[in-house]
Each structure stands twice: as structure tokens, then as C-alpha cells.
Amino acid sequence: MDLDEAIQAHSSWKQKLAICLKRPGSVLKPAEVRADNRSELGQWLHGEGKKFSLLTEYKTLVSENARFHRAAAKLVEKANAGQEVALGSDSEFASASQNVVAAITELRKKVSAAGPKSQRRP
Image (cartoon, rainbow, N blue to C red; front, side, top):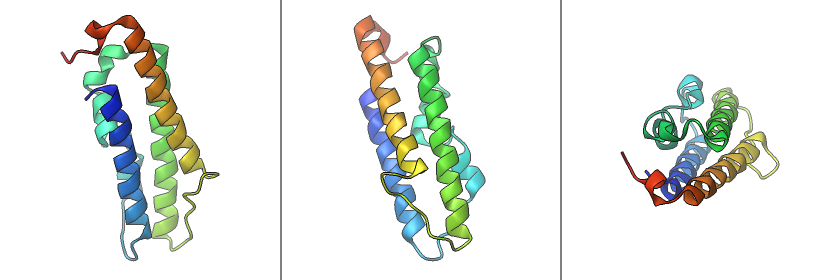
């Protein structure tokens, strides 16, 4: 996965979650949603993406991705309890998602500045 694909992977996961949360009777497991290494982006971060682990931008992305998954798990807990969930732009979920995209963008800038060699897949 390259860093452009990372943004798309995050967006796709977020959309799938939003769809599930809107379906009556859909039961997601908060512990699974909270796990930041199960989504496509999370798998990349905890796998191939570790090649960037010395970069501050990578560490920020890992942290923001974990925050996003914690916020998503809270929404799942609420939805499973029959409570209303807020996905709007002023929600923790939306804020965390925006921060993930911003962190990916910052990592991409850092990697691009280092040259094409650092972007290659191992």
C-alpha cells in the first residue's frame, strides 16, 4: 500500500462502519472495532509501514489511527445499546478521522521529501 492508498483505505473503512451503524439490528463487536491493527490501514501500519517507524509523522499516524478506532468503538457500543450515534463533523469520530488523514498527508510529505527510494515497497 502506498500513502495515497492509505487515505482511501481509511475512508473506505469509515464508510463501511457508518453503513453498519445505520442498519437496524447490525451488531458489531466494540473490541474488534477498537483494534487498530485489523483495518487495512492498521495492518499496513503494523506491518509494511513499520519501515517508517523512526519518523515522528509515522508515530503520530499510529497514535491518531488508534484514537480513531477508540472513537469508532464508542459509537459501536452506543449503537449496540440502542442509543443515537453522532457521525457529524463535530463528533470525536469525525475529528479523529480528519486527524488520521492529516497524519497520512504529513507522512506522505516527509517520505516524498526523502525521495522515491523511501516510498518503494520492500
